[in-house]
Image: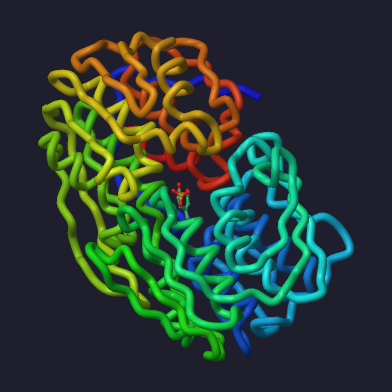
Length: 435
Ligand code: S3P
């Protein structure tokens, strides 16, 4: 499939967008609901391919999850901490790293049961030892290709014991997998990260009744004491700031643009993009800041204006790891040379996002120097419409659509359907706000 973009020369972007539910929070609401006692009602769950993968895996293990459709609350009937049935077939995680990694943590301790996790071509290339390694320290048995690093992965459920684990990468997927395994391990478990990653698991596990403490320098240390029963909850999922990011950048770089993005999750472990846009001098206002079910939320208003180059280093990466592709587009429109370093994690996302963005934006005339751990992007460059490809990565597809908006001439985007992994209504929203 391909899509022709950027044929609305001279038109701007105006209006209001309500981005779909946060992907990270959606996965967690389904998973924690499944291992709780009683039912969980989820409002605002992201009805996209990744959460559907999580729901399908849960159903295959005997968890009742009501149909997932936009605007409908989702009900999960919890089976308790150790209630998963051994599935009859391979569990398909699709394109979703969060599904596979959190599932590893949940399943490793299911004594006496066997599970096989698989995924699509992209997921089968992504490193899983970062989760399997720590779980093995807790007594887990996980086997897979490349010495247990690559799916398909086979898990033989066992009783686990608590451990103190220092993770070399700041990854919420790794941290969350360990915390989930810790819920039924013998003894306490502590995870220590180099820099704090997103903390949705900690917030939501606490709300479900888990015994969990957070401390250490910059909240980098989380300890779980097993034994607590999780109880079903009402979860309200805010809009995904990682999806809002496309509109924030589109609004900041498109002449005449004025956009409001409503109901955006503003958890401080996710708002690095707002810090960088502020650093660039972008015109962004936070309106109506409020707290919704334990997560900060607000509306964001953005309008076009002049932008300066940014500098992003390793400390900031965990707070905007998914937003680097679209920030690379913003950098093309800024004055000066923007630099990203300490971002080697981008090479093991759905695609190698450093090289894919350098290649695809490069095809539109961007001047990008790629390094092992980041890139330098020349500002003040006029992008030109070109034939580009999402390379199957949802965030690349949407970032290239934002670039096409300000490029001269038409852009032919191949494989735009990748956007459905996290934002199925993206193309409709884009059309609706053209003004
Ligand atoms: C996620 C964490 C991040 C992020 C991914 C979702 C999560 O990955 O890139 O889109 O839900 O925990 P890492 O934790 O591996 O950095």
